Length: 129
Image (cartoon, rainbow, N blue to C red; front, side, top):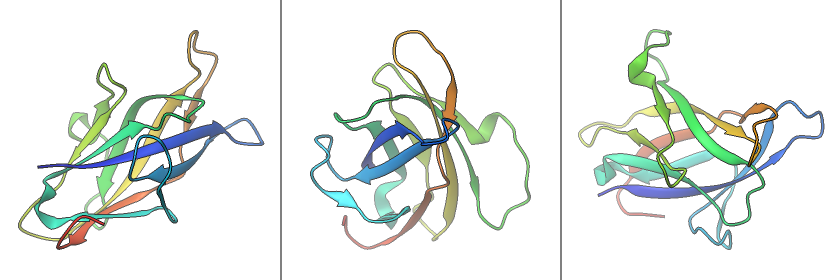
């Protein structure tokens, strides 16, 4: 089992970041307010995919469990798959919070890379929201 979240990303006003909104559906009809994404404890993974309304391509993500030692390595970066989805594994036996930075590019030819603000994924709900 996994939990899907869809992201709509647009270039920020200053041109340096991706302004993101999160949704429970690919059509971007049911927004998840804010940037805390609560998923079922039993989900085992949170999958970020592109909403149909996005202007930028999701190409990867970096993530870190909040409260653990800082560091970057191969275990906390995930490239997007062929469907422009990124999967973050989550434990099913304890509650944690992961800070996530999604990475986007312009569609077609890459003109720039745009990191998202820092959404958090928290596996603390009994059932899907």
